[in-house]
Image (cartoon, rainbow, N blue to C red; front, side):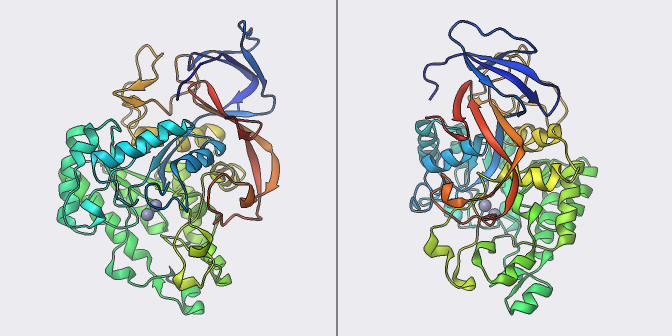
Length: 457
Ligand SMILES: [Zn+2]
Ligand SMILES: [Zn+2]
């Protein structure tokens, strides 16, 4: 994965959108940052004039589908999509076949990620055996495995049993893990197809009420506080959820949350087309919800953006609405959508994007070397590529940090064309949409995975 490491001098990049400067990458680390750096002998030089430099993006939530649904995605193609989207670390959800609920399966996924070598694939472990919702999976064995699992989720399903949720939260305290909850009260969403509201009435489809999400989030915040453990809320989609998380954080409880790019940009009015490309779990909501999600991400109530990249083969999506699978691809468009929804609207600057798409998700995934979520210490001395057996991500673009970074051209605008995506699936809701920006280059520990907007190897 690491291979031979050459030196790279990146000229004239704008770290976090600031003043243009040079970055020198040597032996997997950022060796120097400053104007007018000299290229050491043998170094490759990359002209980054006009490009924003951000720390490599970290995705807390993607479905890479391997093992079991290699017709939709593999760890290889998902890693390619991630690199092209500017990601250097991606968490792979556990709802594979077999389910990632043992040390053996998470190690298999982790090894496939290392073989692909394009980003650090971080397996998420299932909370309950087989995602069955009746008994805990082998959380400790997955945490102790070579994959060093710290994030556990039954995503795709909700851990709806309050006793099991409490036990899981208690269990992961021993190794500083976090339970990532897919908040969906099952009885309130039986047969649900679209957001409950005007559109569901218009279409005659079963509605998916906001309270089905909010009730579980409220319960889980209280449970996390009760046992003093860490809860992460997946794909927050309603204004009420943002309010509940804001309240929980005001109490000092260990609650973090993510929002997807699609929930930041799209509304349920798109479902009126009856095109299942807009069918997703949780469903697209209203403009009021979109506005609250954007405000929540801007003020830090929502910690981070996570893609919930959910590839599906054409036959599972291009069918009638009720029969179609839930989910959208997102790895290759995430940064562009956040640019449109948050930066062009003036809600976040590039430093804010770096925080919400790299530093904070790295901290939640326990990849930042510790401390940054709690405002505590940072790494001493620097110069390290990993912490506690897990690769380091989300570190600032400064000497001593691992050379994980993305170079992004904010000046271009182009239509999204899923036919050109590396993902094995084509179910992008942004197809044909004009979006700003392009990922020009991605570096993983000093080695380019993407150059000139294409895979480098
Ligand atoms: Zn989910
Ligand atoms: Zn998901």
